[in-house]
Image (cartoon, rainbow, N blue to C red; front, side, top):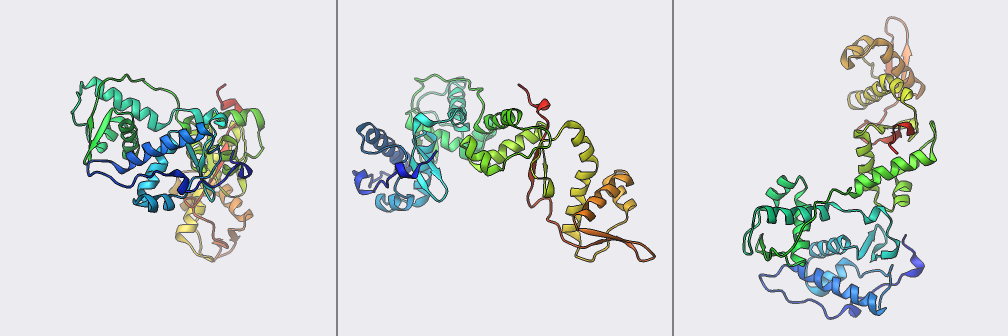
Length: 348
């Protein structure tokens, strides 16, 4: 956890000597990364800096070295991949404390898995020193990862001396290395497993799960990682996304079955209203909604009853009666919250 009282601002001046000149054949990100990796490790060993000390801003370093902020952004990402720094919004980048890395953060990242996969590709295809590697796009297609992940992995292999960059291509420098078949979980996958265990140990049916922000703080990961982990749990049937008054609630399987027949349809009708109606608009009949969503009229009626209770629609009788919009809900595509299933569905 980041502790303000333990931090100080590292200045650009104390990080001299700096990298100011680059040959046309040199990769700026690689050269600056190598320099900073060495500087941070030596400064930590000599006691010049401590964990939680704040790095100079990317802009200040970029200006002093004479490169773009985009280049420094890529340098900082490399340092994060090596576990030397961490970044927090509204705080900046600070020196990591290796002694406080959580079990989750010690997991194999996509970048590490991709590094080993590229090593394996070089070995299995008998590429020799001087051989050109496939383009990052083709490698990304073969390995099933993003182009950005491949570029980051190749950058790490350059730092290890296995590859060298020549223009826009990577060339094999040496085949004197071994590789591992990494089958360990990614950060997102492990976070998903951690959330399952957290639910199993701390929640009962009907209780609300903590917010994404609280989960991110608990598991020491980003909110995006929590979001992706919950998406993964959705695919596994462990959680289901809902919004509005339900929040994030632990429910049992029967609740989900009952919910899914009318509350899911309720969300679809909310979306229909948000996209097609104004306040005062008359909705299609129950029969028309039944045909549209291919569910029973009873399911549609129950969904509309919920919407009436929430104040989004009202029913009127008579010749000019029907169901009329009284308030505009958000589209279900705007946002959603998470609803977790019973712990009986969580594997031990």
